[in-house]
View 1: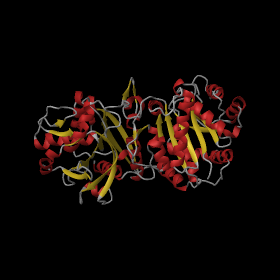
View 2 (view 1 turned 90 degrees about the horizontal axis):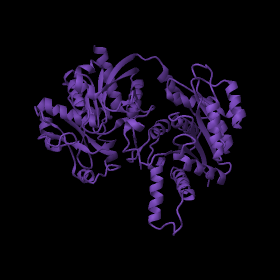
View 3 (view 1 turned 60 degrees about the vertical axis):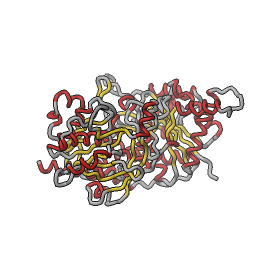
Length: 547
């Protein structure tokens, strides 16, 4: 039986430095060299998962096939490695504490006093080894959340130290750190990373590699400084410069021989990675495009303080990029705050080539989203409604086509006489008990497609498809027949409970109008763009050409 090998990836100086992309890139290189890789991300927060966190606070929770609500980095792993992730690939400190405390309550520690070390660290190490065994991995890639020196993640670093001590020659450490270039100085400064490595050293960890995030490639002087002050070889200082496209990073790292150096340090067989498919992708991404289209995204999670961020819809933006490359197009997204639509009217949406209403929760901004769905239908602008955007397009249709002016979702208005979107019975009890975390319709659900529909064609004329779900409220089947008579097409229903999954308008009425209860954005990958997004982008290109 082969011994498991372990690669820890830590961060220094600032959060959001790119540990996830670096980890995924290393995983891609090792996989391309013939090794089985299992990644696992450890987060600092005490939430059990990412599902109850405000997306503005921590970005878009990535939804896995098994229903795990995880960090965005898990989505990066899926996109880079081309594999589904799940519960074994994502762990929070809250989940670690919960497991240890539950075990103590069951007297599984036999009366021993339960302490952070060794019990918390033992649980961390056990999860790392379990993920590796379950994934039949050669290498387990462990990303540690946060930055070195934070009190929240000290037990992760202690577990890493213990695992390194007990497995000599089988563990290496990659430290991803920031090298700033202050404008008033005009040169990269290595001191912040030197201090970050000093913090690692104080915890008993010596990095094997420094991956230096910076504006441009490191020069030899900076590499030599790192080598001298961080007790390392210059060839183990890897430059990670700003790039136009994140998918360039694996190729950039490989050119600096990181794959070979990792193989040598872990004593695993080195083979030149097969990267042609990935190289071809990068060429395709960077090539000049024939078309440029504008897509307006009418959402509610763009702002944080005085800043506008796209992380709340990270998977959506990725899926749009993937579909754009497949259509020889560039998509320019314009963010439209749903509350601004309510205040100023739908005219602020303008005349884009496409409109998307994405995921959302609660009443705030809902009328702006409903107005956007109506606007897209009336103006014949390609429309894609995702989850909440599908539900609110149904509300818009009920109001416009059937004249039910009070039509709504019971999430927004429980007094409506036409609750065309409602909560199903098994979810009512959960809400009454305030059981929010991990209790929605989550993960992959099979759906039966309506033959001849637009959706059926988009999915390759398959009778059964599957999408990932993350919601409580559903299309109310009580109103289905009336809405279908008015022209709405129900093009997919769940196999298990006959719930409406996809709605659309006929091709004769609209160039592209589709709402899906699922989340196709989570299944799109750069080498395999999602067909729904590919079709939507194609409709936007056609819209642009017809103007």
